[in-house]
Amino acid sequence: MPESNCPTHPFNKIALSFSGGGYRAASFHLGTMSYLNRLNWGGTPLLNQVKMISTVSGGTIPGVIYALQKQEDKTFEEIYNFLLDRLENLDLLKESFIKLSTEGIWNNKTKRRNIINAFAEIYDEHYTFGKTLEEFRHLDSHLEALVYNSTEFNNGLNFRFRNKGKFNGSARVIVPYAVAVEIKLSDVLASSSCFPGGFEPMLWPNDFVHADSINLEKHAKNNRTVGLMDGGIYDNQGIESVLKYNSKVGEPYFDLVIVSDVSSPNMSSFKATNVDDTWFSKRTFQDFIKYNVRFNWILLSAIIALMCPLIFGLGNEFLQGICSGLAFSLIAVLIFKVWAIKKVSNKIKSSVEKLVGPNFDFYKSKIGPLSIARVPFGTLSVLLKDRIFSLSILMQEVFLKVVRRLNYNKLYVDNDYKLRRISTLIKCLTEEDFPKYKSSLPDNSTITYDNFVGQRIAQTVAEASSFGTTLWFTETEGMNNVLHKLVATGQLTMCFNMMIYLNKWITDDDGNFDRLSTKDQNQMKEMLAQCKGDWVRFREDPEFLVGR
Image 1: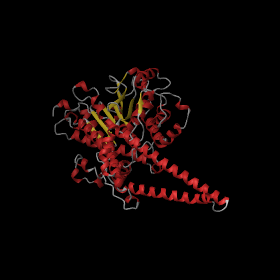
Image 2: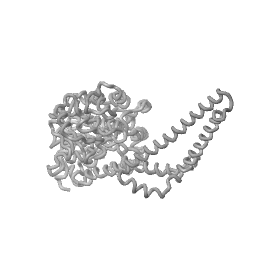
Image 3: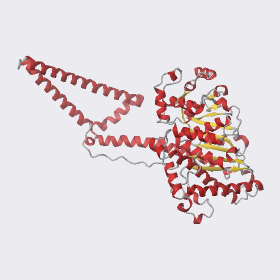
Image 4: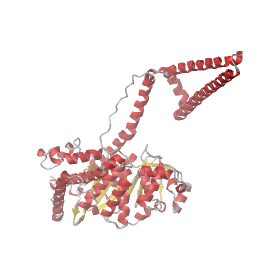
C-alpha cells in the first residue's frame, strides 16, 4: 500500500459520526465521547483531537449540546453531567403533551401546534436555551466543522444544518447563511430526530420561524414549504457528511473517522400470520349482511306487534301508550341504523377512492369478481396483517439496512481508509457478534467470549442493545438504570474497538507503523496499555466510569 494512503499523524484530525436511535443513541454516544475524553494523547484528552462532528436523529442531542457548551467554555465533566441529568430526568413525552395543551406558546402563526414542535419547545427550554446556529459561526474550541443531518421530503435528499460550507439545506433546497444563523438549535434537534411514525414532518421554513428571526421570516414568505424528517431516513450513521467534507483535497481529510453506531445490520424476520379458528374468523361480510336483514325483519315484526294495541284498540290507554312509545323508539333505531350503515359505507368508499385515485373503477372491476364479501374475516385479516407487517419491515428495516450498508461501503471499500476508521457498534460485544471481532485481537487462539468479555459486560451490553428507539425512559427502565448501562456500553465498546485499531497499527504488515515518528509510536503503545488496563476494570465493573 502506498505511504500516502495512511496518515502520518494518526490522531491529529478526528471526525466523529453519531448514528440515530433516540435516547439509546444519545446515551451510547455520550459514553463514546466520555471514553475518548479519558484516553490520553500528547498530554491532553484524545477528544480534543476531534475536528468534526456529524450527527443523525438521537445522536444530534449530544452532538449539539457538546458543541454548544464547548463554546461556553464548559469542561467535559460539566457537559457530561448536564447531559446525564437531562437524559435521566427529562420526560420528553410527558412534557410534550403539557406543551400541546398550553395556549401561550402557540401564538406564532407559522409554527403548527403538533408533537414535533412541542418537542422543539422542550429542547429549547431544557437543552439549548434559545441559542441559534449563530453560536457556531466562529468556533472557539477544538472543533472546526459541525453537521446535523435531517431528510427533506420534496426530493429525498440529505438536509444539512452546519456551521460552514457552501450552503445549509440540500442541493435542491438551499438555505442562505444569513437565514441559517437564525435557526434555533432546538429546531435543528427536533427536525434531525423526527422519526417516521413517532412524529409528523417539520415544515421548513414555517415551523422554524420565531420572534427574533427577521431573515428567516422573510424567507418563509418567499419560499414554498418542505417537509423535514429524521436524518436516518437518508443516512442513519451520518457517514456521507464526513466523507464529503473537504473532499476536493484528493485524499482523506481526516486521520481517523470514528462511527459510533447503535443500529444493527441484523433485522427481524418476517412471520406469517396464522388464521384464528374462531366463530368470528369464519364469518363473512355476506353472513353479516344476512344477519342485518334478519335483524331488520325482527325489528319490523316487533314494531308491528307493538302497534297492534293502538291500531285495534286493545288494552287500556296506558298499555297503548307504552307500546306505541316502544314502537316509535324501535322505528328511530331502525332509521338510525340504516343511516349509519349508509354513512359509513359512503365514507369507506370515498376514502378508498381518494387512496386509489383515478384508477378506482379499474381496480373495482378487477376485484369485483373475487367476491370479497364471501371471504372469511380470518382470511381477510391474514391478507391485511401480512401486508402491513411486510410494509413495516420494508420501511423501518430493509430500506434502512440497505442505506446503512451503502454508506458503510463508502468507508470500508475505499482502501485509503484502511487505517483511518473505527466503527464502534453497540452490539459488537454481544455473544452473537463477538466472533466477528475475535480474529482482530492479539493471541486470539486462546480467547473465548467468557474469558475476554465476561458475564458482567455481556449482561450490560445485552440490556443496552435491546433498548428501543424512544426519546424517553420508562419508570421501570429508570429503576433498572438502563441509562447508565447504555453510557457504560458506549465507554467499554469504544475501549474495545480502540484496542483493535491500535493493534492493527502496531502489527501492520505494510510497515506503516514504522513510518510514524518515535513519539507517535510510543504514544500509541501507551494508549494501548491504558485501554488494556481499563478493560480489566470494565470486566470487574462495567459501570466504573459512569459515575459523575
